[in-house]
Amino acid sequence: AQSVTQPDIHITVSEGASLELRCNYSYGATPYLFWYVQSPGQGLQLLLKYFSGDTLVQGIKGFEAEFKRSQSSFNLRKPSVHWSDAAEYFCAVVPMDSSYKLIFGSGTRLLVRP
Amino acid sequence: GAGVSQSPSNKVTEKGKDVELRCDPISGHTALYWYRQSLGQGLEFLIYFQGNSAPDKSGLPSDRFSAERTGGSVSTLTIQRTQQEDSAVYLCASSSLLSETQYFGPGTRLLVL
Image (cartoon, rainbow over all chains, first blue to last red; front, top):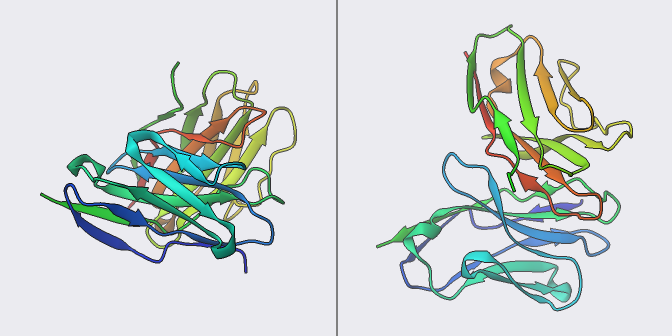
């Protein structure tokens, strides 16, 4: 079945530590790929996106993500986490046969230890 | 420029009442989307408008839900005879004609008592 999987419900890291949030998708053709962040009580803010080309994508707030076709993954990374990064992170895809509907993963809540 | 705006920010209603949620998309964006975010179901697509084309209503959970978009801009999501399971955050997004990137509003948090 077509799906987007974020296997980690919660992740806790110390401030200054590196971060990797996992995302896997299951679609026949590579969809458009997105990462969004949601702070408490806020809407969704786009961090970065991948449509084609260079598989390492740079986003806002120092985030990057790498598309790996062989693993059907689009993991989000940050070399050094700040306390303000504590939020919920959603991986999302727009399947090629949909052209507009965003399909979201279940989200990963990031907690940052001082 | 201004982002997507939604009103009200919060809405508390009694079961059985009707509610209207409003979305103002980014100026010039032809596509508008409604999503629902609830504890049990995560983020779900509800409805999609693109220009003057017929909307894609395939995500609406029941016939109590409807949406319209007037003049190709502002949209209203209406929930009739609200039920407690309708309690959720309703998010609106918009995108331009040539982009797959959707920009979200802050959402309306609906609580049905």
